[in-house]
Image 1 (tube, helix red, strand yellow):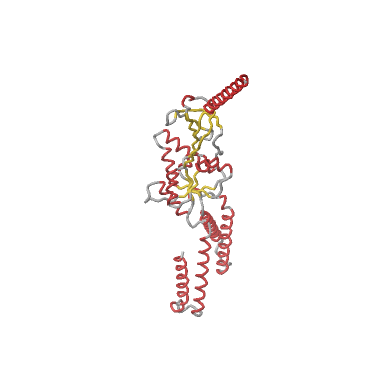
Image 2: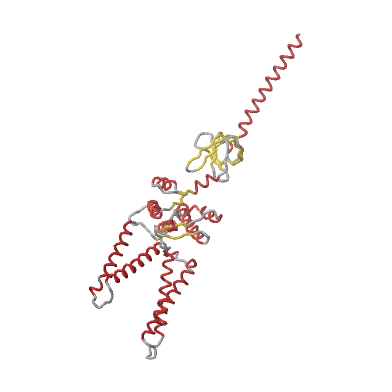
Length: 362
């Protein structure tokens, strides 16, 4: 930033010196050298002011405004050429007419273009720069989150806002996956492309960044560099990319983390109803799943595979990959409880008989 200020100051200084020395290089010019130096200072200062204001304008707005101005000036030139040159119209009036026409139509073209700037789609040629103030905190989409597809449902709920950046190299990776000879990869790639197409039809603000990093090969490394350049956050489901981004102090929005946070709280002692689908890693274990995909490991559940059972929760394990619940069959706890109650009842009955026998002896 200090370089820009230095360049501006140097430009104003050189313009002032050049304008002040013009009377020496062009003796025919009238006026004092100080007057010309002041004129050069004013003009150079005005140019620097315009340059600083342009830096605060969005690239899309600047491009559309310049395009409208250019069309207006071309129209003014054509209209000026249409006026015939006759001796009845003095030269000074023709020049005044041409200048006025260029000012009027140039201004009109720029204003009309800027008024409809929001309706103009430049999605194929977005100018994404780190200096764009809109991009502070923007969200950069990863391949995994597009293939996952849950982002589309989240956008439709209206909870998400801000600008989302889809890097061109991520789109290219989706295309390569969709062209894969492997049917499974091809299906995942096409699902990702369908998600992109569906996101464009929503109210979500998504822009495509054409910026690439030819010196970087891995897509994950390109995403890290893109997030650094745009000072944005990465939206991903990739566990490894999440860790690498955290090492580089880049904020990450992990949809899996959000999904885990929204799952209902289950406490030890609660009873769940589910179907045991397969055996676990340890002998005798059975594995089932809740409606939200949470894995439930059931002790001694191997004998009840394919059955719908009631499971009493004993403990839970929360990991980066998700949540696991451990439990045991509810009826396996019921049987020991009934056995203990039966033994207690037998002991009480035996004690009562002993007391009755003692009373009879007395």
